[in-house]
Image (cartoon, rainbow over all chains, first blue to last red; front, top):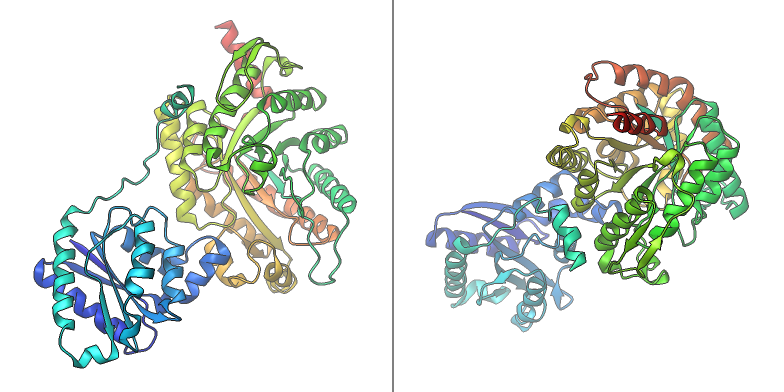
Length: 190
Length: 362
């Protein structure tokens, strides 16, 4: 099964990517997966151009195809101004609106303090609900202090287990699903 | 193969002078451009239809009728005619009238329009865009193909015993292209009727165009109109030429950088790399245009966008001279090279009339 990890971390190394990698490794322990990581930092300019041009550049198009073809997704963003980062949202703004329909998604975020942990519930979960993804019940938030405290590893394990259970059930969509013309016309005459 | 130009009809300030043409100047410029197209031996002039500033061509048949009176050979077409928000009865009448005035030098391209508020301004719902295109076109076909029409549908008041006048010239309706950039439903519609499919690829990478055209060709064959290679395909193009390619780039860059569609976005270099836009020498335009058939197959109509982004009329006319004298003659020759015998030319009034007569005899 194909697992795609979307990471919106900006620094190198990034704690967002660190969390993403830990989540991906945990999923792989539950069920063997091929992991592909999409680093949004590398696509930032193409994402901006997608807004002005209307089409994706080559690297962005490859990332979009990977996301559309995945059996499951892990999406991780740093918290900026009390929400997901603009770059994170922009990637999903230029994705085909049906690309995530029926796809299991594990949501995760990182921040400087634990006071922003509900960003998972008030920002990420509604976004992916709108995109008709199947969001796993456990979201994982890691504040700076969590990297030296107990509890994070258990949350990672629980969320990864939930994603692993859902991934085989992902309902893909059929490409080029066009209603035959006669049916389209007949539907109007009913 | 047919070569021509299509115009959006935008009124855009010239970024190098800051001057904005008046609507009158722009309309007259569009006419001058069409006359130039005929003069330099191009086959087709197509105008857009828009109902909001900064665009002037809200009334395509008025403009095309005027151009028809001043030309002999040019095929007059649209890019596009709004099949969603126009009354199909009025389209049937207007374009049949134009056919008579232009002695058959008319075809048209259906489109849905990309300006959201036009739908409510004309009393329509944008969410019904595809359904409007489907139902309105089905009615338009009947109005042209049948002398007396009884009709009832979802979007328009019913018709009882209605005859659209004038009847199409010689009983042969204008050939129809369906233009779409992203909607396979429209490619499906074009295939169902055996009409032409125009993919306006000018802002899109080759692989997208390839997918859309392949889908249309496959469905054209599915509906029994011929082989996939016989389907009728049109493509856009966008060029700016000077003898030396560096001069072309230098002169066009301010227009590119400030253009309404892609300005302040990608670099000219990235955009020429990823889309059909060519800024360079006539030879570069020839090479790029010939490459279209590598992914779209042998096709029937090539339209170039030449007059936009505030380019002054004088420059556009120079561009058309180069297009007609240096580019298109080579393209005609090269596209004919290796073109399989079964690939048809784009239908014209004469070819459709000949086909209709043959059918009547048989």
